[in-house]
Image 1 (cartoon, rainbow, N blue to C red):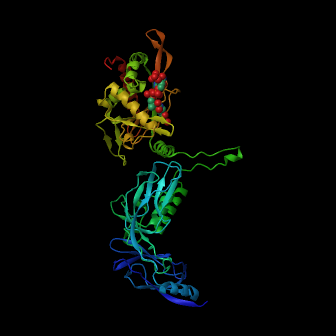
Image 2 (tube, rainbow, N blue to C red):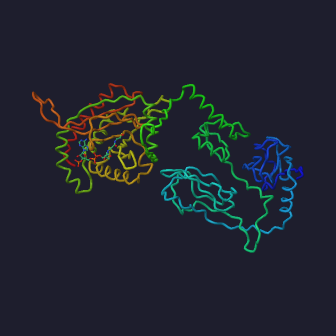
Image 3 (cartoon, rainbow, N blue to C red):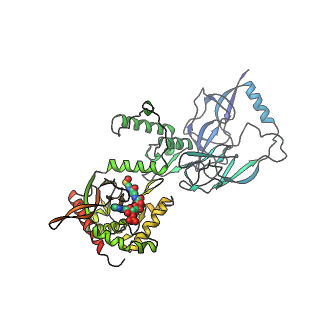
Length: 508
Ligand code: CAO
């Protein structure tokens, strides 16, 4: 086999002129496959990869990063084996047997292996991108796994009708593809050499914190996703602020070094439990994973103090029992939680600093002039916190009805993101289950949370003797950066009185 030298020239750049070389992807001496990307170019509006037109060893580059080039320019020399070249020659001179026919088809989601309502967590292509069969278009996340949606045909993405955060199902249309179809009469496959240059694709643009735009290619974005790296935090060193793979690697390396120096939290040791007996693994669903991350963050970053108290709800419970049936007949439940939330509204009005959030820099208190209360709800999928808005304007019946509606929504997995946002303070009631006192974790950015445990009959000193009274255990956790211990105690005393006074509500 004879070795032959051959030049690599730029293909038709789809009308783009004076484009800049922003990345050289292979080094001199490297063996490249036909179609392997060797260069990245950037025009006014887009970036594009230049594939090797044939297989061989790239012996010399005639261009460098920063050079401006045009269609037909020689960019490199490569050596090929005579046999390879012969094959390519035949391909080159073969008469075109395939005619490209523009044909638009819907891109639909395939069978998702039984998964429903999965979230789009990444869109890997944009309108105008040329795709090949099996190229990943989207990344979806279901309860148990993430999955890529591949293209079934080669062609150009005409439009996409999904975005990150959308919830999709098998069969949903996600966009339109213009595919280059073999004409019916064509008996032979298309020539293997000289593929058309991919159409100009808009660069992936993200908005970093400082407001400037950053540019990163699909492979960099994919790697960032896999490492859980926020690209806006990575310093870009490529031309025109482009984020290179090396930038990402340097960022991850720096993070690892920081953690090795002890600035990061220590991780849990890995234990081989099978050494002690039989085990099995159960994957945590999405809600549980998110709750775990959220609670860990809050527990670590907020200096918590928890203040406990007993409140005598004997009279309140008597009143509740009188009205309970009437509420039930009207489709609501008059539970202790209703009175707890009403008393909380009164205490938040009296202590506005509990109805506030600390600014992220820690220098300002944002005091809210509305009262939205969240309540922790135990569901088969895990803990969620629906929020009831403007509680101060609701009657007892309206509040009781809303708790029923929101609890049902929560248990049916039907809460929207809005249903769970905007809370001023959260109540967590385990009274229906049991236990005396527990220390709840503040639901940041709120600054306090009230835990309610099971009321029990206790001997209570009234006048000159102990009398049996129904006592409700309360635990108030608060962010000590915002609330002093004295105010914490004042708040719970105020709340206890407000709760007791609910017993005197005459018109329900
Ligand atoms: N003391 C004694 N008994 C109580 C009680 C209390 N504080 N609270 C409820 N009960 C009893 C009552 O007998 C009640 O029935 P009646 O109202 O008909 O008498 C029964 O328990 C059932 O109450 P409930 O729990 O269904 O209703 P609720 O309004 O009190 O609570 C909800 C609703 C959604 C808060 C609750 O069902 C729930 O999910 N709680 C769990 C919250 C949670 O997981 N918190 C932990 C978060 S931190 O990890």
